Each structure stands twice: as structure tokens, then as C-alpha cells.
Image 1: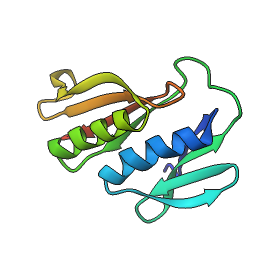
Image 2: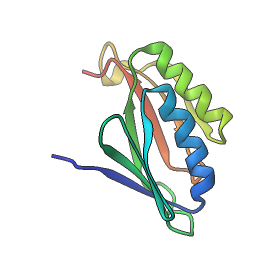
Image 3: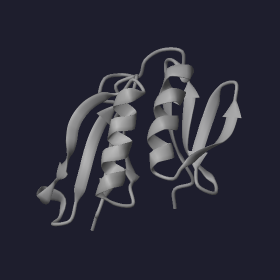
Length: 121
């Protein structure tokens, strides 16, 4: 039903470094690279990062990315921090979302919330 999701960002270079690092740890890769935007996926581009030239409004956006297990959640979270992201919730069990739900939360360079999750029900 969903073809793709896009985030509009202020600094495409900073955002590219962040999403390259996080998505690489999750088995994703950059599939499109254009002057005004980049896109990620495994086969088809599903997450677009588009240059907006100004920061998005506070609280604009949240994306949850699938990880293959707890180690992948931790690796993606650590990579995101190393690539300019901010911690918004360390890796851990989130029983309020289900008994196997393990997630970590980051803020990308524009403050957009990125969740990395394994074990969603």
C-alpha cells in the first residue's frame, strides 16, 4: 500500500551520512542519488531523504526501521550516534508494544525521530 516515505531535511550531506550509517547496519543501501535527494531500500527505494533547505518543524516525522535482531538494533543505534545522530532512547525491551519488541530511538541531524526495532508483533 505504501510506495515510499520521504523526510525533508535541511542539510542533505549531514543526513546522508546519518542514514548511510544506520541503514547499512540494517541491510539497506542507497539506491538513488540525485542533486536534491537520496533514496534507500533493499530492492526498491522506499525511504527518501530530500533537501528542503530548512529544518523541519519540531516533532515532524517518525520512521520505524526493521532490524534482523537485537544485535542489529544496537549496531544501527551506535552507527547513528557515531554519524551525527542523537540518542532518544537506548536499545531495550519495550513491553508496552509487545513481549518481543526490542527497540532503540535516535534523532537524525534535523531532529527527526528514527526507531530501530526487532521482534515487532
